[in-house]
Amino acid sequence: MLDKEMAISGDYIVIKALENGVTIIGLTRGKDTKFHHSEKLDKGEVLFAQFTEHTSAIKIRGRASILTKHGEIEAGI
Image 1 (cartoon, rainbow, N blue to C red):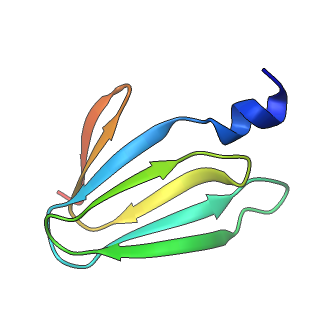
Image 2 (cartoon, one colour):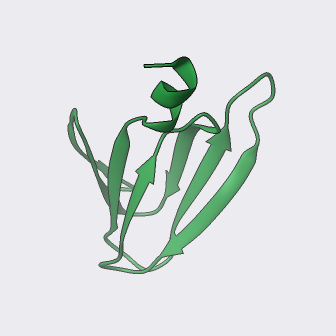
């Protein structure tokens, strides 16, 4: 698989809001890390997110359950 294809088919995570107003922020790759996308979730809403050639990190503010291939994590508790 080419490097670009590997970056585009990166890992997925699932984020479920456990309260209203959970914020998810995508951060860029490269020399300077910058915000490139944000979403707000209300209690019970679910977002599937993917690490790509543009997204190197995801920041979560608020109470949320995060599912990854490595297990489940709770944020904001």
